[in-house]
Image 1 (cartoon, rainbow, N blue to C red):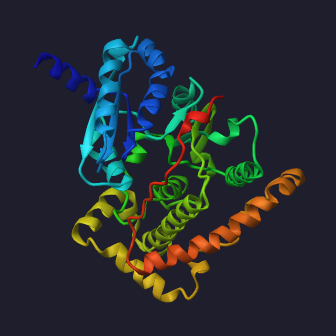
Image 2: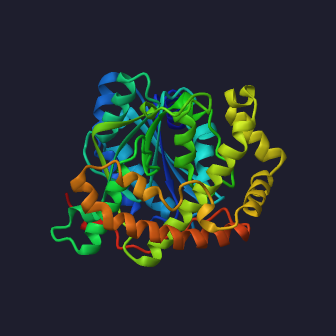
Image 3: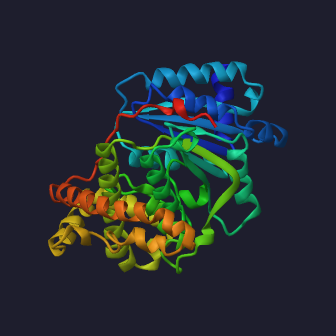
Length: 380
């Protein structure tokens, strides 16, 4: 009883909360958690007298994800040099899905007095030891920034020999990072006060990062978009496993297009018509909408699809996005990335058709789990 009381006190008074979203990740979760516990943030918080809580949000898991997380947490809470600084626990959520896990973590599970919230996936490796601390410091020194992000690196970047396919994949990543205010949902740090005014509609189609980016950069749709709201932290990186099979790539693109379509419907078709009083309390507005009218977003989706004749018009810029990003690069980078822009545009058309058909069938909760090789080859 005494130990439980101490742990509960530390959770309630935590200054930073880390939420790790995990769905059937028993194979790679151990490596992810080990990279987390090697971070310098533990020492930095120890010297400050701050507290940190870590929550593994195991949602709808049917494998040993919970057991693996608990084993690592038990070991670290007894052996870690800064064990007095943090608490760690596994939260089992019966409902599968990142949207529900995000809402539960932000609005009910994370420490109420936390200043910053980290959201991270359970299948990445945090690369540089100072990554998490540099993200916190970025928000501390820049009052205009609401979210700090790191640089996401594909594991193939660290291969000693790269195939033409690898070079094409890395060029596609360069196109993505050429855009301002990029928010990678795999890892980011957000001010708690900002996060708690965001509620993710349950049918958002698992593309929460684009929705969060839109709200944050526009101060909840009250101002023109400002890229400065999302800042890239210096010396902060994580590694993720690149999709390598054509089937996995198409599935991932299909998911993203479905998500971007739903964001377009919610933001441009619904929220921009709401009064400022509702935008000021957006989390309450959207949560109430989900509670009282569970089918509202699917209904808006059907209305939108009834007006869209061709799948490449699901949302503005679906087919031409890569070439617009290409124009922002210098001449040398344009030449290098041009094949990736062409391939990406063709892929968007194929995946867009699949997304169009899925949305017409009423599917919004599409989150495929691709079979990949693991991050063992990532050895920076």
